[in-house]
Length: 408
Length: 176
Image (cartoon, rainbow over all chains, first blue to last red; front, side, top):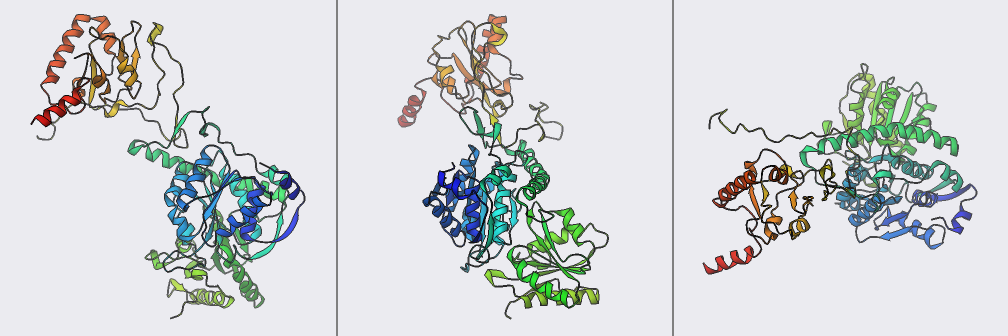
Protein backbone atom coordinates (compact mmCIF):
# COMPACT_ATOMS: atom_id res chain seq x y z
CA UNK A 1 0.00 0.00 0.00
CA UNK A 2 1.34 3.41 -0.90
CA UNK A 3 1.45 5.88 1.96
CA UNK A 4 1.24 9.66 1.58
CA UNK A 5 4.90 10.03 2.51
CA UNK A 6 5.94 7.41 0.01
CA UNK A 7 4.09 9.17 -2.75
CA UNK A 8 5.99 12.36 -1.85
CA UNK A 9 9.30 10.53 -1.50
CA UNK A 10 9.61 9.15 -5.01
CA UNK A 11 8.02 11.93 -7.03
CA UNK A 12 11.25 13.20 -8.53
CA UNK A 13 14.27 11.26 -9.71
CA UNK A 14 17.14 11.74 -7.25
CA UNK A 15 20.78 10.79 -7.05
CA UNK A 16 21.65 9.34 -3.68
CA UNK A 17 24.81 8.05 -2.03
CA UNK A 18 23.70 4.63 -0.80
CA UNK A 19 24.98 1.06 -0.37
CA UNK A 20 23.90 -1.92 -2.46
CA UNK A 21 21.71 -3.16 0.39
CA UNK A 22 20.01 0.21 0.72
CA UNK A 23 19.43 0.25 -3.03
CA UNK A 24 17.59 -3.06 -2.75
CA UNK A 25 15.52 -1.84 0.20
CA UNK A 26 14.52 1.21 -1.85
CA UNK A 27 13.62 -1.10 -4.74
CA UNK A 28 11.27 -2.92 -2.31
CA UNK A 29 9.56 0.39 -1.52
CA UNK A 30 9.34 1.36 -5.19
CA UNK A 31 7.92 -2.04 -6.12
CA UNK A 32 5.41 -1.72 -3.27
CA UNK A 33 6.23 -5.19 -1.94
CA UNK A 34 3.44 -6.64 0.22
CA UNK A 35 5.26 -9.13 2.45
CA UNK A 36 8.91 -8.97 3.52
CA UNK A 37 10.43 -11.52 5.88
CA UNK A 38 13.73 -11.21 7.65
CA UNK A 39 16.14 -13.03 9.88
CA UNK A 40 19.48 -11.44 10.70
CA UNK A 41 22.73 -12.74 9.23
CA UNK A 42 25.63 -10.72 7.91
CA UNK A 43 25.92 -9.27 5.29
CA UNK A 44 22.26 -9.67 4.16
CA UNK A 45 20.96 -8.10 7.39
CA UNK A 46 21.78 -4.59 6.13
CA UNK A 47 18.77 -4.94 3.81
CA UNK A 48 16.39 -5.69 6.69
CA UNK A 49 17.80 -2.73 8.59
CA UNK A 50 17.07 -0.37 5.69
CA UNK A 51 13.62 -1.88 5.09
CA UNK A 52 12.64 -1.44 8.74
CA UNK A 53 14.00 2.12 8.66
CA UNK A 54 11.89 2.95 5.58
CA UNK A 55 8.88 1.43 7.33
CA UNK A 56 9.54 3.27 10.60
CA UNK A 57 9.93 6.54 8.69
CA UNK A 58 6.52 5.99 7.10
CA UNK A 59 8.08 5.89 3.65
CA UNK A 60 7.00 2.36 2.97
CA UNK A 61 4.15 0.15 4.14
CA UNK A 62 4.43 -3.63 4.05
CA UNK A 63 3.96 -6.67 6.26
CA UNK A 64 7.46 -6.89 7.70
CA UNK A 65 7.86 -10.18 9.55
CA UNK A 66 11.01 -11.02 11.46
CA UNK A 67 10.87 -14.82 11.57
CA UNK A 68 12.44 -17.11 14.15
CA UNK A 69 14.79 -18.67 11.59
CA UNK A 70 15.69 -18.55 7.91
CA UNK A 71 13.61 -21.68 7.30
CA UNK A 72 10.44 -19.94 8.50
CA UNK A 73 11.50 -16.73 6.77
CA UNK A 74 11.48 -18.43 3.36
CA UNK A 75 8.37 -20.51 4.18
CA UNK A 76 6.37 -17.36 4.98
CA UNK A 77 7.14 -15.61 1.70
CA UNK A 78 6.46 -18.82 -0.19
CA UNK A 79 2.95 -19.00 1.26
CA UNK A 80 2.35 -15.26 0.88
CA UNK A 81 3.34 -15.54 -2.77
CA UNK A 82 0.82 -18.34 -3.35
CA UNK A 83 -2.08 -16.13 -2.23
CA UNK A 84 -0.96 -13.35 -4.55
CA UNK A 85 1.31 -11.11 -2.45
CA UNK A 86 4.46 -9.56 -3.92
CA UNK A 87 7.28 -10.84 -1.71
CA UNK A 88 10.90 -10.22 -0.80
CA UNK A 89 13.35 -11.90 1.54
CA UNK A 90 17.00 -12.86 1.62
CA UNK A 91 19.87 -14.36 3.50
CA UNK A 92 23.57 -15.16 3.43
CA UNK A 93 25.91 -18.13 3.69
CA UNK A 94 24.72 -20.91 5.98
CA UNK A 95 21.51 -18.98 6.74
CA UNK A 96 20.52 -19.45 3.09
CA UNK A 97 21.40 -23.13 3.48
CA UNK A 98 19.24 -23.48 6.59
CA UNK A 99 16.27 -22.34 4.48
CA UNK A 100 17.00 -24.83 1.75
CA UNK A 101 13.89 -26.98 2.10
CA UNK A 102 11.72 -23.90 1.63
CA UNK A 103 14.01 -22.60 -1.13
CA UNK A 104 13.71 -25.70 -3.27
CA UNK A 105 9.91 -26.02 -2.92
CA UNK A 106 9.49 -22.34 -3.83
CA UNK A 107 10.82 -23.13 -7.30
CA UNK A 108 8.93 -26.44 -7.45
CA UNK A 109 5.66 -24.65 -6.70
CA UNK A 110 6.47 -21.96 -9.30
CA UNK A 111 6.23 -19.10 -6.80
CA UNK A 112 7.85 -15.81 -7.88
CA UNK A 113 9.64 -14.97 -4.63
CA UNK A 114 12.47 -12.46 -5.01
CA UNK A 115 15.41 -12.96 -2.65
CA UNK A 116 18.63 -11.07 -2.10
CA UNK A 117 21.64 -13.24 -1.32
CA UNK A 118 24.37 -11.29 0.42
CA UNK A 119 27.14 -13.64 -0.67
CA UNK A 120 29.14 -14.90 2.27
CA UNK A 121 31.60 -17.74 2.86
CA UNK A 122 29.98 -20.91 4.14
CA UNK A 123 30.87 -22.08 7.63
CA UNK A 124 33.22 -23.59 8.79
CA UNK A 125 35.52 -21.73 9.33
CA UNK A 126 33.34 -18.75 10.15
CA UNK A 127 34.00 -15.76 7.88
CA UNK A 128 31.94 -12.75 6.86
CA UNK A 129 33.54 -12.18 3.46
CA UNK A 130 32.20 -12.98 0.02
CA UNK A 131 32.22 -16.35 -1.71
CA UNK A 132 29.68 -17.37 -4.33
CA UNK A 133 29.07 -20.93 -3.13
CA UNK A 134 26.00 -20.01 -1.07
CA UNK A 135 23.86 -18.68 -3.93
CA UNK A 136 25.31 -21.14 -6.46
CA UNK A 137 23.74 -24.00 -4.52
CA UNK A 138 20.35 -23.20 -6.14
CA UNK A 139 21.70 -23.29 -9.68
CA UNK A 140 19.95 -26.59 -10.56
CA UNK A 141 16.64 -25.97 -8.79
CA UNK A 142 14.69 -23.51 -10.94
CA UNK A 143 15.79 -20.24 -9.36
CA UNK A 144 16.88 -17.47 -11.67
CA UNK A 145 20.26 -16.31 -10.46
CA UNK A 146 21.87 -12.93 -11.13
CA UNK A 147 25.15 -11.38 -9.94
CA UNK A 148 25.23 -7.61 -9.65
CA UNK A 149 28.35 -5.44 -9.70
CA UNK A 150 27.15 -2.01 -8.53
CA UNK A 151 24.53 -0.53 -6.19
CA UNK A 152 22.72 0.94 -9.21
CA UNK A 153 22.57 -2.50 -10.79
CA UNK A 154 21.25 -3.94 -7.52
CA UNK A 155 18.28 -1.55 -7.57
CA UNK A 156 17.61 -2.04 -11.27
CA UNK A 157 17.94 -5.82 -11.08
CA UNK A 158 15.54 -6.09 -8.15
CA UNK A 159 12.89 -4.29 -10.23
CA UNK A 160 13.64 -6.56 -13.19
CA UNK A 161 13.43 -9.56 -10.86
CA UNK A 162 9.80 -8.97 -9.87
CA UNK A 163 8.86 -8.16 -13.44
CA UNK A 164 10.32 -11.42 -14.83
CA UNK A 165 9.52 -13.72 -11.90
CA UNK A 166 5.86 -12.64 -11.75
CA UNK A 167 5.33 -13.02 -15.48
CA UNK A 168 2.78 -15.87 -15.88
CA UNK A 169 5.00 -17.39 -18.59
CA UNK A 170 7.73 -17.78 -15.97
CA UNK A 171 6.47 -17.89 -12.34
CA UNK A 172 9.89 -18.81 -10.98
CA UNK A 173 11.79 -17.37 -8.00
CA UNK A 174 14.66 -14.95 -8.57
CA UNK A 175 17.80 -14.54 -6.45
CA UNK A 176 19.73 -11.28 -6.70
CA UNK A 177 23.28 -12.09 -5.60
CA UNK A 178 25.24 -9.26 -4.03
CA UNK A 179 28.86 -9.67 -2.96
CA UNK A 180 29.14 -9.29 0.80
CA UNK A 181 30.86 -6.08 1.94
CA UNK A 182 32.01 -5.00 -1.54
CA UNK A 183 28.42 -4.41 -2.58
CA UNK A 184 26.25 -4.71 0.52
CA UNK A 185 28.27 -2.25 2.61
CA UNK A 186 29.88 0.04 0.02
CA UNK A 187 28.18 3.27 -0.94
CA UNK A 188 27.94 4.62 -4.45
CA UNK A 189 25.86 7.17 -6.31
CA UNK A 190 22.54 5.62 -7.34
CA UNK A 191 19.82 7.19 -9.47
CA UNK A 192 16.57 6.40 -7.67
CA UNK A 193 13.72 6.40 -10.21
CA UNK A 194 10.28 7.88 -9.68
CA UNK A 195 7.34 5.79 -8.53
CA UNK A 196 5.54 6.64 -11.77
CA UNK A 197 8.26 5.08 -13.91
CA UNK A 198 8.43 1.98 -11.71
CA UNK A 199 4.66 1.53 -11.99
CA UNK A 200 4.93 1.86 -15.74
CA UNK A 201 7.52 -0.93 -15.77
CA UNK A 202 6.16 -3.21 -13.07
CA UNK A 203 2.52 -4.34 -13.30
CA UNK A 204 0.70 -5.83 -10.31
CA UNK A 205 1.36 -9.46 -9.49
CA UNK A 206 -1.59 -11.49 -10.76
CA UNK A 207 -1.39 -15.23 -10.06
CA UNK A 208 -4.63 -15.83 -11.94
CA UNK A 209 -6.06 -19.34 -11.80
CA UNK A 210 -3.15 -20.51 -9.61
CA UNK A 211 -3.98 -18.11 -6.77
CA UNK A 212 -4.81 -19.84 -3.51
CA UNK A 213 -8.09 -18.19 -2.52
CA UNK A 214 -11.50 -19.34 -1.19
CA UNK A 215 -13.09 -18.18 -4.47
CA UNK A 216 -10.65 -20.35 -6.42
CA UNK A 217 -10.61 -23.68 -4.57
CA UNK A 218 -7.44 -25.57 -5.44
CA UNK A 219 -5.12 -28.07 -3.81
CA UNK A 220 -1.46 -27.07 -4.04
CA UNK A 221 1.52 -29.43 -3.78
CA UNK A 222 0.09 -32.97 -3.70
CA UNK A 223 2.19 -36.11 -3.39
CA UNK A 224 2.62 -37.27 -7.00
CA UNK A 225 5.25 -40.03 -7.30
CA UNK A 226 6.58 -41.49 -10.54
CA UNK A 227 3.38 -41.18 -12.57
CA UNK A 228 3.52 -37.37 -12.57
CA UNK A 229 6.86 -36.04 -11.35
CA UNK A 230 8.76 -36.10 -14.62
CA UNK A 231 6.06 -34.08 -16.40
CA UNK A 232 6.11 -31.51 -13.60
CA UNK A 233 9.92 -31.17 -13.81
CA UNK A 234 9.60 -30.69 -17.56
CA UNK A 235 7.09 -27.88 -17.00
CA UNK A 236 9.57 -26.08 -14.73
CA UNK A 237 12.28 -26.66 -17.33
CA UNK A 238 10.06 -25.08 -19.98
CA UNK A 239 9.36 -22.09 -17.72
CA UNK A 240 13.12 -21.53 -17.35
CA UNK A 241 13.53 -21.77 -21.14
CA UNK A 242 10.70 -19.26 -21.62
CA UNK A 243 12.31 -16.90 -19.09
CA UNK A 244 15.09 -16.11 -21.61
CA UNK A 245 12.66 -14.38 -23.94
CA UNK A 246 10.78 -12.74 -21.08
CA UNK A 247 14.04 -11.32 -19.68
CA UNK A 248 14.98 -9.82 -23.07
CA UNK A 249 11.51 -8.31 -23.47
CA UNK A 250 11.48 -6.86 -19.93
CA UNK A 251 15.04 -5.53 -20.18
CA UNK A 252 14.33 -3.73 -23.45
CA UNK A 253 11.32 -2.11 -21.85
CA UNK A 254 13.41 -1.25 -18.79
CA UNK A 255 15.96 0.57 -20.96
CA UNK A 256 13.20 2.49 -22.71
CA UNK A 257 11.61 3.69 -19.47
CA UNK A 258 14.70 4.32 -17.31
CA UNK A 259 17.23 5.29 -20.02
CA UNK A 260 20.04 3.07 -18.79
CA UNK A 261 21.33 -0.49 -19.19
CA UNK A 262 23.71 -2.65 -21.23
CA UNK A 263 23.11 -3.99 -24.75
CA UNK A 264 22.39 -7.43 -23.25
CA UNK A 265 20.60 -8.31 -20.02
CA UNK A 266 22.69 -11.47 -19.65
CA UNK A 267 26.31 -10.37 -20.12
CA UNK A 268 28.42 -7.23 -20.02
CA UNK A 269 31.32 -6.90 -22.44
CA UNK A 270 34.28 -4.70 -21.55
CA UNK A 271 36.93 -3.92 -24.21
CA UNK A 272 35.97 -7.14 -25.97
CA UNK A 273 36.41 -5.91 -29.57
CA UNK A 274 39.54 -7.56 -31.05
CA UNK A 275 40.44 -9.04 -27.60
CA UNK A 276 42.71 -12.08 -27.86
CA UNK A 277 42.63 -12.87 -24.16
CA UNK A 278 39.35 -12.62 -22.28
CA UNK A 279 38.79 -12.89 -18.56
CA UNK A 280 35.35 -14.01 -17.40
CA UNK A 281 33.89 -13.40 -13.94
CA UNK A 282 30.86 -12.42 -11.88
CA UNK A 283 30.01 -9.72 -9.37
CA UNK A 284 32.15 -6.96 -7.93
CA UNK A 285 35.52 -8.42 -8.90
CA UNK A 286 34.77 -6.86 -12.26
CA UNK A 287 35.93 -3.51 -10.87
CA UNK A 288 39.64 -4.35 -10.28
CA UNK A 289 39.60 -6.47 -13.44
CA UNK A 290 38.42 -3.48 -15.46
CA UNK A 291 41.15 -1.27 -13.99
CA UNK A 292 43.82 -3.88 -14.80
CA UNK A 293 42.52 -4.37 -18.33
CA UNK A 294 42.43 -0.64 -18.99
CA UNK A 295 46.10 -0.42 -17.97
CA UNK A 296 47.04 -3.42 -20.12
CA UNK A 297 45.24 -1.90 -23.09
CA UNK A 298 47.35 1.22 -22.61
CA UNK A 299 50.39 -1.03 -23.04
CA UNK A 300 48.90 -2.45 -26.24
CA UNK A 301 47.77 -5.84 -24.91
CA UNK A 302 44.57 -7.12 -26.52
CA UNK A 303 42.72 -8.07 -23.36
CA UNK A 304 39.00 -7.91 -22.58
CA UNK A 305 36.53 -8.80 -19.85
CA UNK A 306 33.20 -10.59 -20.01
CA UNK A 307 30.98 -10.28 -16.98
CA UNK A 308 28.31 -12.95 -16.57
CA UNK A 309 25.21 -11.28 -15.10
CA UNK A 310 22.61 -14.04 -15.35
CA UNK A 311 24.06 -17.34 -14.16
CA UNK A 312 20.57 -18.89 -14.54
CA UNK A 313 19.25 -18.86 -17.17
CA UNK A 314 22.74 -19.05 -18.70
CA UNK A 315 23.06 -17.11 -21.96
CA UNK A 316 24.62 -19.96 -23.94
CA UNK A 317 24.42 -18.40 -27.40
CA UNK A 318 25.51 -14.93 -26.34
CA UNK A 319 28.52 -16.20 -24.41
CA UNK A 320 29.54 -18.45 -27.32
CA UNK A 321 29.36 -15.54 -29.70
CA UNK A 322 31.25 -13.19 -27.39
CA UNK A 323 34.10 -15.68 -26.93
CA UNK A 324 34.21 -17.22 -30.41
CA UNK A 325 37.00 -14.99 -31.73
CA UNK A 326 39.46 -14.90 -28.84
CA UNK A 327 42.50 -17.13 -28.42
CA UNK A 328 42.18 -17.91 -24.73
CA UNK A 329 39.78 -17.45 -21.82
CA UNK A 330 40.62 -17.19 -18.14
CA UNK A 331 37.62 -17.82 -15.89
CA UNK A 332 37.79 -16.23 -12.45
CA UNK A 333 35.73 -18.10 -9.87
CA UNK A 334 34.96 -16.61 -6.48
CA UNK A 335 33.90 -20.11 -5.50
CA UNK A 336 35.29 -23.59 -5.23
CA UNK A 337 33.99 -26.97 -6.35
CA UNK A 338 36.10 -29.58 -4.65
CA UNK A 339 36.75 -32.58 -6.89
CA UNK A 340 35.07 -31.05 -9.96
CA UNK A 341 36.38 -31.68 -13.50
CA UNK A 342 39.95 -30.29 -13.65
CA UNK A 343 39.39 -29.19 -10.03
CA UNK A 344 38.11 -25.95 -11.55
CA UNK A 345 35.54 -23.47 -10.26
CA UNK A 346 31.81 -23.68 -10.96
CA UNK A 347 31.74 -20.92 -13.59
CA UNK A 348 34.82 -22.40 -15.31
CA UNK A 349 33.16 -25.74 -15.89
CA UNK A 350 29.95 -24.06 -17.11
CA UNK A 351 31.99 -21.97 -19.54
CA UNK A 352 33.95 -24.95 -20.83
CA UNK A 353 30.70 -26.81 -21.41
CA UNK A 354 29.22 -23.83 -23.27
CA UNK A 355 32.27 -23.63 -25.56
CA UNK A 356 32.54 -27.35 -26.33
CA UNK A 357 30.33 -27.50 -29.49
CA UNK A 358 32.38 -24.74 -31.22
CA UNK A 359 34.69 -25.94 -33.97
CA UNK A 360 37.34 -23.36 -33.13
CA UNK A 361 37.59 -23.39 -29.36
CA UNK A 362 39.74 -21.01 -27.34
CA UNK A 363 41.99 -22.36 -24.58
CA UNK A 364 40.12 -22.18 -21.26
CA UNK A 365 41.88 -21.81 -17.91
CA UNK A 366 40.44 -21.76 -14.41
CA UNK A 367 41.33 -19.36 -11.61
CA UNK A 368 40.04 -19.47 -8.07
CA UNK A 369 40.44 -16.08 -6.42
CA UNK A 370 39.09 -13.76 -3.75
CA UNK A 371 37.69 -16.42 -1.43
CA UNK A 372 36.32 -15.44 1.96
CA UNK A 373 36.27 -11.78 0.99
CA UNK A 374 39.97 -11.55 0.12
CA UNK A 375 40.41 -8.67 -2.30
CA UNK A 376 41.17 -9.44 -5.93
CA UNK A 377 43.96 -6.93 -6.61
CA UNK A 378 45.07 -5.47 -9.91
CA UNK A 379 48.33 -7.42 -9.57
CA UNK A 380 46.27 -10.65 -9.24
CA UNK A 381 44.59 -9.85 -12.54
CA UNK A 382 48.03 -9.23 -14.09
CA UNK A 383 49.15 -12.63 -12.87
CA UNK A 384 46.09 -14.33 -14.37
CA UNK A 385 46.61 -12.65 -17.73
CA UNK A 386 50.31 -13.68 -17.62
CA UNK A 387 49.32 -17.33 -17.12
CA UNK A 388 46.78 -17.19 -19.96
CA UNK A 389 49.31 -15.42 -22.21
CA UNK A 390 51.85 -18.17 -21.58
CA UNK A 391 49.28 -20.77 -22.64
CA UNK A 392 48.59 -18.78 -25.82
CA UNK A 393 52.31 -18.49 -26.63
CA UNK A 394 53.11 -22.17 -26.06
CA UNK A 395 49.78 -23.38 -27.45
CA UNK A 396 49.14 -25.67 -24.49
CA UNK A 397 47.85 -25.52 -20.94
CA UNK A 398 50.40 -26.56 -18.32
CA UNK A 399 48.00 -26.35 -15.41
CA UNK A 400 44.23 -26.06 -15.86
CA UNK A 401 43.43 -24.56 -12.47
CA UNK A 402 45.41 -22.03 -10.42
CA UNK A 403 44.54 -20.52 -7.05
CA UNK A 404 45.42 -16.84 -7.17
CA UNK A 405 46.51 -14.87 -4.10
CA UNK A 406 46.84 -17.91 -1.84
CA UNK A 407 49.85 -18.17 0.50
CA UNK A 408 51.95 -21.29 0.02
CA UNK B 1 6.70 -70.59 -11.54
CA UNK B 2 8.32 -70.56 -14.98
CA UNK B 3 8.30 -67.47 -17.22
CA UNK B 4 4.90 -67.18 -18.90
CA UNK B 5 3.09 -69.20 -16.22
CA UNK B 6 2.29 -66.25 -13.96
CA UNK B 7 -0.89 -64.22 -13.61
CA UNK B 8 -2.16 -63.44 -17.12
CA UNK B 9 -4.41 -60.65 -15.85
CA UNK B 10 -3.87 -57.26 -17.50
CA UNK B 11 -3.47 -54.67 -14.77
CA UNK B 12 -5.53 -51.48 -14.77
CA UNK B 13 -4.08 -48.91 -17.11
CA UNK B 14 -4.74 -45.19 -17.08
CA UNK B 15 -4.68 -42.35 -19.55
CA UNK B 16 -2.10 -39.95 -18.11
CA UNK B 17 -1.78 -36.42 -19.52
CA UNK B 18 1.55 -35.04 -20.78
CA UNK B 19 3.36 -31.97 -19.47
CA UNK B 20 1.87 -29.74 -22.14
CA UNK B 21 -1.73 -30.41 -21.12
CA UNK B 22 -1.22 -30.54 -17.34
CA UNK B 23 -1.95 -27.47 -15.27
CA UNK B 24 1.23 -25.73 -14.10
CA UNK B 25 2.09 -24.79 -10.54
CA UNK B 26 1.42 -28.19 -8.93
CA UNK B 27 -2.28 -27.43 -8.71
CA UNK B 28 -5.30 -29.71 -8.52
CA UNK B 29 -8.58 -27.86 -9.17
CA UNK B 30 -11.19 -28.02 -6.43
CA UNK B 31 -14.33 -29.98 -7.24
CA UNK B 32 -17.18 -27.78 -8.36
CA UNK B 33 -20.42 -27.72 -6.41
CA UNK B 34 -23.71 -29.16 -7.67
CA UNK B 35 -24.55 -32.35 -9.51
CA UNK B 36 -27.52 -34.65 -9.94
CA UNK B 37 -28.06 -38.35 -10.34
CA UNK B 38 -26.95 -40.26 -13.44
CA UNK B 39 -29.51 -39.85 -16.17
CA UNK B 40 -31.39 -37.21 -14.19
CA UNK B 41 -33.59 -39.72 -12.34
CA UNK B 42 -33.57 -38.00 -8.96
CA UNK B 43 -31.23 -38.91 -6.18
CA UNK B 44 -27.84 -37.17 -5.95
CA UNK B 45 -24.40 -37.75 -7.44
CA UNK B 46 -21.81 -35.15 -6.46
CA UNK B 47 -19.45 -33.73 -9.11
CA UNK B 48 -16.08 -35.47 -8.80
CA UNK B 49 -12.59 -34.62 -10.00
CA UNK B 50 -12.21 -35.74 -13.59
CA UNK B 51 -8.49 -36.32 -13.23
CA UNK B 52 -7.86 -37.29 -9.62
CA UNK B 53 -9.08 -40.88 -9.17
CA UNK B 54 -8.50 -42.84 -6.00
CA UNK B 55 -9.31 -46.41 -6.99
CA UNK B 56 -5.96 -47.47 -8.46
CA UNK B 57 -4.55 -48.55 -5.09
CA UNK B 58 -7.74 -50.21 -3.80
CA UNK B 59 -7.30 -53.74 -2.39
CA UNK B 60 -10.90 -54.28 -1.17
CA UNK B 61 -14.24 -52.79 -2.12
CA UNK B 62 -17.65 -52.57 -0.40
CA UNK B 63 -20.49 -54.79 -1.59
CA UNK B 64 -23.92 -53.49 -0.54
CA UNK B 65 -27.02 -55.50 0.33
CA UNK B 66 -29.74 -53.10 -0.86
CA UNK B 67 -32.48 -55.35 0.63
CA UNK B 68 -31.38 -54.87 4.24
CA UNK B 69 -30.23 -51.24 4.00
CA UNK B 70 -32.18 -49.06 6.46
CA UNK B 71 -31.08 -45.77 4.77
CA UNK B 72 -29.42 -44.49 7.94
CA UNK B 73 -26.98 -42.32 5.85
CA UNK B 74 -23.93 -43.28 7.95
CA UNK B 75 -21.89 -44.70 5.05
CA UNK B 76 -22.68 -41.67 2.87
CA UNK B 77 -21.81 -39.33 5.75
CA UNK B 78 -18.61 -41.02 6.92
CA UNK B 79 -17.00 -41.92 3.60
CA UNK B 80 -13.80 -39.82 3.46
CA UNK B 81 -13.94 -39.69 -0.35
CA UNK B 82 -17.67 -38.84 -0.71
CA UNK B 83 -17.95 -41.89 -2.92
CA UNK B 84 -21.59 -42.76 -2.17
CA UNK B 85 -24.17 -41.72 -4.74
CA UNK B 86 -27.70 -41.29 -3.40
CA UNK B 87 -29.97 -43.31 -5.67
CA UNK B 88 -33.47 -42.16 -6.74
CA UNK B 89 -34.97 -44.67 -4.27
CA UNK B 90 -32.86 -43.21 -1.39
CA UNK B 91 -30.30 -46.00 -1.22
CA UNK B 92 -26.52 -45.51 -1.20
CA UNK B 93 -24.44 -46.80 -4.11
CA UNK B 94 -20.65 -46.80 -3.62
CA UNK B 95 -19.15 -45.23 -6.76
CA UNK B 96 -16.15 -47.35 -7.69
CA UNK B 97 -14.43 -44.53 -9.62
CA UNK B 98 -13.79 -42.72 -6.36
CA UNK B 99 -13.72 -45.47 -3.68
CA UNK B 100 -10.22 -46.11 -2.29
CA UNK B 101 -11.34 -49.18 -0.33
CA UNK B 102 -10.71 -47.90 3.18
CA UNK B 103 -13.57 -49.86 4.78
CA UNK B 104 -15.02 -47.01 6.86
CA UNK B 105 -18.52 -47.64 5.40
CA UNK B 106 -18.44 -51.25 6.52
CA UNK B 107 -17.28 -50.26 10.00
CA UNK B 108 -20.00 -47.65 10.55
CA UNK B 109 -22.89 -49.63 9.03
CA UNK B 110 -25.23 -50.67 11.90
CA UNK B 111 -26.81 -53.56 9.94
CA UNK B 112 -24.96 -56.92 9.96
CA UNK B 113 -23.81 -57.96 6.45
CA UNK B 114 -25.35 -54.91 4.76
CA UNK B 115 -21.93 -53.59 3.67
CA UNK B 116 -19.11 -56.13 3.30
CA UNK B 117 -15.56 -55.43 2.17
CA UNK B 118 -14.62 -57.96 -0.53
CA UNK B 119 -11.24 -58.70 -2.09
CA UNK B 120 -10.69 -56.48 -5.15
CA UNK B 121 -9.38 -59.46 -7.14
CA UNK B 122 -13.02 -60.69 -7.42
CA UNK B 123 -13.88 -57.79 -9.74
CA UNK B 124 -12.97 -56.72 -13.26
CA UNK B 125 -14.80 -53.42 -13.59
CA UNK B 126 -16.04 -50.33 -11.73
CA UNK B 127 -19.71 -50.84 -12.61
CA UNK B 128 -22.55 -49.73 -10.36
CA UNK B 129 -23.81 -52.37 -7.89
CA UNK B 130 -27.15 -50.62 -7.59
CA UNK B 131 -27.72 -50.76 -11.36
CA UNK B 132 -26.90 -54.48 -11.34
CA UNK B 133 -29.37 -55.01 -8.49
CA UNK B 134 -32.05 -53.01 -10.33
CA UNK B 135 -31.68 -55.19 -13.42
CA UNK B 136 -31.74 -58.58 -11.67
CA UNK B 137 -32.53 -58.53 -7.95
CA UNK B 138 -32.42 -62.29 -7.37
CA UNK B 139 -29.25 -62.72 -9.38
CA UNK B 140 -27.60 -59.92 -7.45
CA UNK B 141 -28.58 -61.45 -4.09
CA UNK B 142 -27.11 -64.82 -5.06
CA UNK B 143 -23.88 -63.30 -6.35
CA UNK B 144 -23.55 -61.10 -3.25
CA UNK B 145 -24.28 -63.93 -0.77
CA UNK B 146 -21.66 -66.14 -2.43
CA UNK B 147 -19.09 -63.33 -2.26
CA UNK B 148 -19.82 -62.65 1.40
CA UNK B 149 -19.58 -66.33 2.30
CA UNK B 150 -16.26 -66.60 0.48
CA UNK B 151 -14.97 -63.50 2.20
CA UNK B 152 -15.86 -64.95 5.62
CA UNK B 153 -13.33 -67.76 5.03
CA UNK B 154 -10.53 -65.22 4.62
CA UNK B 155 -8.63 -63.50 7.42
CA UNK B 156 -9.53 -59.84 7.35
CA UNK B 157 -6.72 -57.56 6.27
CA UNK B 158 -8.01 -54.38 7.86
CA UNK B 159 -10.99 -52.73 9.48
CA UNK B 160 -13.90 -54.12 11.52
CA UNK B 161 -16.98 -55.69 10.19
CA UNK B 162 -19.57 -53.77 12.17
CA UNK B 163 -20.00 -51.16 14.88
CA UNK B 164 -18.61 -52.56 18.14
CA UNK B 165 -16.15 -54.82 16.33
CA UNK B 166 -13.19 -53.00 17.85
CA UNK B 167 -14.42 -53.59 21.40
CA UNK B 168 -15.01 -57.27 20.61
CA UNK B 169 -11.48 -57.68 19.27
CA UNK B 170 -10.03 -56.05 22.39
CA UNK B 171 -12.10 -58.31 24.64
CA UNK B 172 -10.93 -61.36 22.68
CA UNK B 173 -7.25 -60.41 23.02
CA UNK B 174 -7.65 -59.63 26.72
CA UNK B 175 -9.51 -62.91 27.24
CA UNK B 176 -6.54 -64.82 25.81
